[in-house]
Length: 433
Image (cartoon, rainbow, N blue to C red):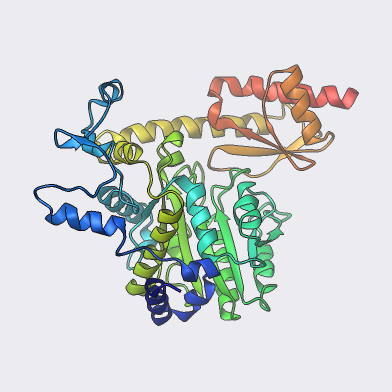
């Protein structure tokens, strides 16, 4: 093992030996080089005042070399903020501004110790980093039965984790915290579990209420008290899009400092929060009472980044930072929030109107995010999906035998009634066939 990896491991052990036990083999072996090209380039940047022949970019006239056909379209930005490599951890100011935003929007983090957010290539990359650092073959990866399919690829296929699902909803259509607790306690012999919490949930658009949130935290605490090391990932992809009474903060805040056997990790980003999907700007943040442990985890995170993508895209980080600092940012974001809320409310009003009866479908609770799910009673979801796309020109997502996901996020409010009329017509067509 490289001595740098060993030093990081010792820092983690000294801070919390349970966290060291959570690391995968790769997580224990990874480190960020301190004497490689990047560190030597950084040293040269600070001291080589005459010529700096270390950086792997081309320069001209003291700025990064660039093509006019590109810069002409980006003339509002300085070439130094576009073309050179961003640091592996991301632009320092962007990390600071995102941290301030996180603390401002999550009051439950007050008095808690968290790492500085590290920039990722959006949220999938952040989840992949977690999988690399913490998931060993056979580790239990716990998440509900209604989930984003990429979890299976990231934690199951890539890292050979053992997927453990539990029903998302109780019979009363509230979050199934008892199911989560049972899934956790079943891992006592393994002594470790990785829990994925995704609110607002994809695909249902559901965010638990405050009481349910407390029950989730209590379930995780009980598992820790039973001797199970729990890595808890808050996948906050759709954070902030809370349209009704629900949690308005990430559970990351309540999980921070919960128990020595609980390591909370927050994965979030500008991707969906700030409506910049193609920019691919995300963040990964850790919580622990030990600052040296957090620093070591950050270095291991940088090691994974260096070994995979080297660093994130610089232009998109610049664009996001510029937006976050703009005086118009909050006002413009609120405008988009209200549009999204209007669409969600319109869908709920349509489904509650009685127009479609209650024999063909019911819907799972939704109060946030981009999506909602119908539970079909009389036809197959896949059969309906195919029928709708080929006969009505309407695209939807079939999930399992009964569930049909509809993204109201990409449909204008005035078009939603027509959309659901077509879905209803499609159901009736199949019933007659």
